[in-house]
Image (cartoon, rainbow, N blue to C red):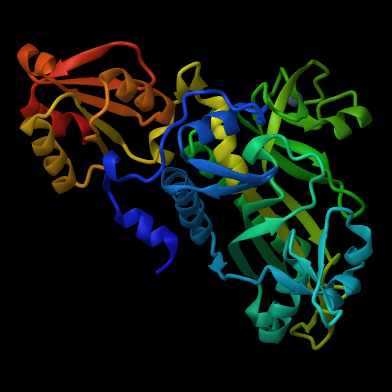
Length: 420
Ligand SMILES: [Zn+2]
């Protein structure tokens, strides 16, 4: 069973059983907010610079992001596969990227045979498609995957925003003409907007014009505005369109409305979409006979989203000085149930939430109230319910949103209805 199925099936957990613990003190070797909070809250563990283990809470977030992306990509016809990380050198020689790509990890076995650790999968997906596709009637088609990618980052210090090993969704579309490609590119762009909206960062994420390299005029980056960003984007004050630094250097006016008034923002690139044209189909000589029997070159688009980076971006956008504040759609659980002192009532509510399929982390540990509240704040689950002598005397349970300061007392019988 895939991890996504396992994690969407588990709806509840006792914190006393969770093997990870929170850490109180700031970490000396992490400069980024996302890594500080994710490590201290027990979502990820740093193995070495740019390489992280996803712990139970962090993996739940990652899996939710993955499932949002999967649902939306399936809607635009994506067929999911799982391609290998270890890839033959010959394919990378064919496309010229064995020598041209500076950040490619190359490994050698004891027999002297060389391989690439995939930073991207054109070298695998093109020969794969070529094996199965032999008629123009098979077009267009769309192949995607979730895969760990490798990139030789010499300065990995942005936490999970820029890893040496990181999880990505990469989608590849195959077409026989430009018009068909353009239709799909627009469809994918709309889908990307939906994905970022559902992940909670839609309002801060801009479709940004970027240079298309030598193959097309433009490509697009999806840039999320936050002070932690390593990129700079220029947002047109008239129409809201964004362009990246490279494009800004080449143009005085907005490509959309011809406006000249831009504001500058720091941003993180959470996704990109690219017109590859025949860049990768040509080296593999991927051609198809059209209805007239003439050879047609296959053209491609590629569409990436960095999942670990998206998760780090959500943390950069949604946190305060006490910890993370997860949007409900990607939170590890919906409810953090806290019992102070031994009380039957909390156990009963825990059972009720399970029955109603409401995701809940139950803090049943024997630690101080202060410790429980601090942990709830750093972990950042959207709803906190406290059951204590005091709350029961006041008439029920204390309910507080992580994003708000005020709490309210809710009658226990109304609690489930309130949370549904
Ligand atoms: Zn404009």
